[in-house]
Figure 1: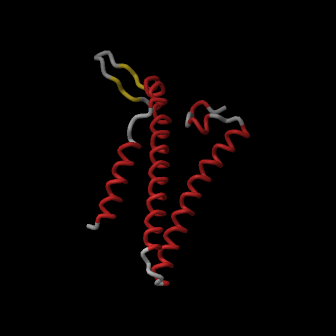
Figure 2: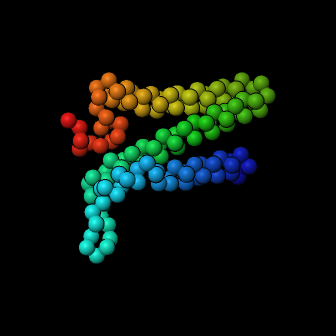
Figure 3: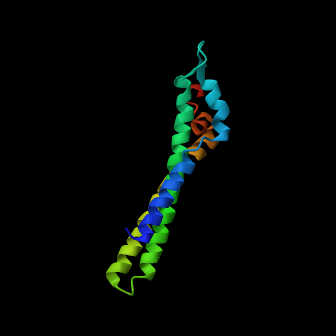
Length: 134
């Protein structure tokens, strides 16, 4: 495996590890959704679904952003090292185009959700508190 591929895999693994770390902002939400057992343990209830879903979407957004940045850098390196070959330049341009389009689509989807939440006043959409929507 080349050095660039090894670095790419390492960066993806590192990004995934940081994205899976628990969020301090959601710690209070998690404590309120678990049921305390008499024996001293805790059992998650269905009220934990919004917390888990919020963590998953945050992780996915971080992962998509990291992959987009890596693909843009990779296509830039491929473009610079193409040596003027039209086929290689076209491949690099296609990779960059698709990486940017993918990142824009993901960011626009979150922007649309937040705009709908802002204009309608339905904060439960952005907080993923599905049960409290009225």
